[in-house]
Image 1 (cartoon, rainbow, N blue to C red):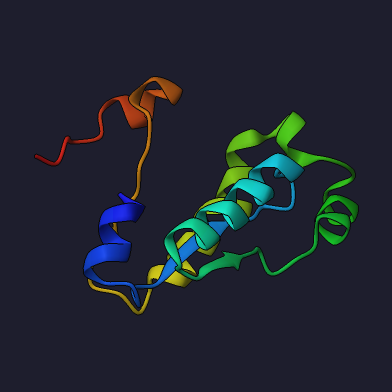
Image 2 (cartoon, helix red, strand yellow; image 1 turned 90 degrees about the vertical axis):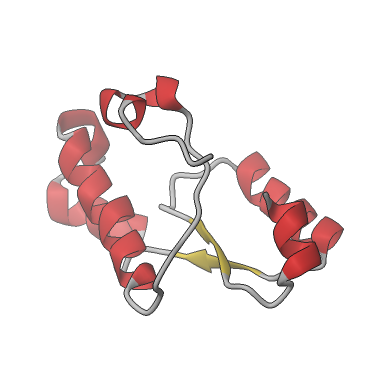
Length: 107
């Protein structure tokens, strides 16, 4: 999708959700994609750092309550970022979760 966006609308807002738990390889891939397609990929993060978040919740919350952790560290960020947009595109895999399995296919 990004190669099409870069060709058609190179100034479009592209972001990567950085929860603070991403692997270094994931962040390096983001940098390679930005360089390859000549686009800016903005890192969007939760309001709290990982250290502050884990201190508040007594350690890594994803181990005890992954739904709450995802709501705080992913969904809240996505909602904040998308608040000013009328539409957005994402690529998800249906085999990653029951919720994603029911996502409609855009054709």
